[in-house]
Length: 304
Ligand SMILES: [Zn+2]
Ligand SMILES: [Zn+2]
Image (cartoon, protein in one colour):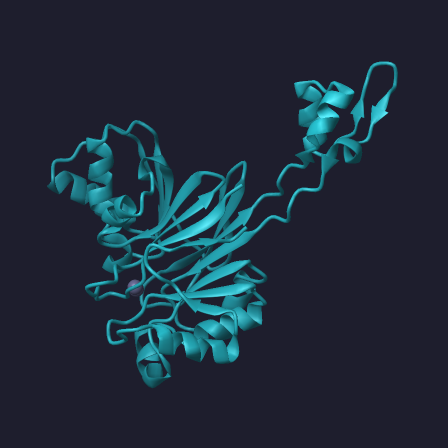
């Protein structure tokens, strides 16, 4: 069962020769979710062999170009690919109007349904309730309305013990019941306890995405206890004042959120072009939260 994250871009607004702007693909049991879509995201998805035709949900943190410019060409590509499946896009306002204008300007007529859901609010909100995962939005603190996203895997079904299926001659319906944690009661009153034919499922996992944002105390409560936290670290300690002025975080800020929230691992990204290597930022974060790591382009991080 997959729950893994592929990083497609680690740069902030100014891309470099080896860093693309923000875009992530989260694979939850082969459902693909695109989180932010900076310039070049579709090229990166091709490069890293992501079957992006299968993406049905796109989550945009905010309407700065380094998180959004890649949406326009992706919509056109889907059209050229003959996409028919609905595409859901979650973003702050006025994303719907911006996309509408762009499609009109370039005379693009989508052959599929694009459903834009406006993300709003000052608290955590459930915005997608899927069979396998729940997705929540929560407000960040940046120069324009910006949201983070939390993906929580739903409790997995129990695992069948293969030999027991044959031993008891279980029907498909009985297997379905046992996987949901119900005992099997047969005609005549025979009871097969679900613990006899199944094993406990693994613990559900979670992933939180925070970019772009300045540090604020409440942020750690939104991402409490997640298995993997991605948090922007545009700057290092040397640019603390600039981080404050531009509504961004330093690596130290990101690490403080990770520590206060009690997350398992921290992944840093959205690095300013002034840092040729993210290693110093990684080291600053590790002083506060040892399980910190700088994200790398094209790398897939297993969360399960
Ligand atoms: Zn940005
Ligand atoms: Zn921004």
